[in-house]
Length: 250
Image (cartoon, rainbow, N blue to C red; front, side):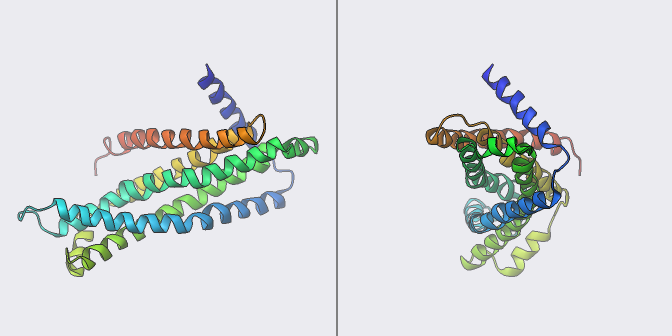
């Protein structure tokens, strides 16, 4: 029953966000602040992870493809598809769930415990719309952009590693990147990024917004929000892959 109770309160929070803004300028200012926090604040870690994941993927793929029958350009194809379909979205978003999710949960939890949310509600402000909605919208705007940057840097990291270690030359790697390319894979990755962005922002917001107690409970809710977000990301990853890849013919 606890799961259903949480789910019901989560839906009520989402429903409560969609009301007419009291002051659109304040909402816009909060939205831009969250875009900077979520987007620019996470750019470094996403770039670093994506670049080195691409490099590792290239080295490990070359280690496994030892058959002389398979052309060496296949390494670039595998790196490209692995980065686009999985690593640039799922792995990056799991990291972002820890970085962004814990920040959102602790920020809202601190506001709840210090009664700042109660004070805003007494002033007649819809706190769900003012505090939660800009975070979710900012995540929906910035996280797909981070995923696109992650794709680019992942493929670049694979190129640098493949050429630097002598596995492939630049011409062979670039040739492999263009072979059998399926544009739908990019669309699939972007669809996943929007779903993941909503999960990463809304679940921690729910746990932070509904904190009860003191500083100890803020830490617990922050940890719980990251764990639940990661589980939901993996479940959504499987469901979306099953729906959008198996049932789609290219």
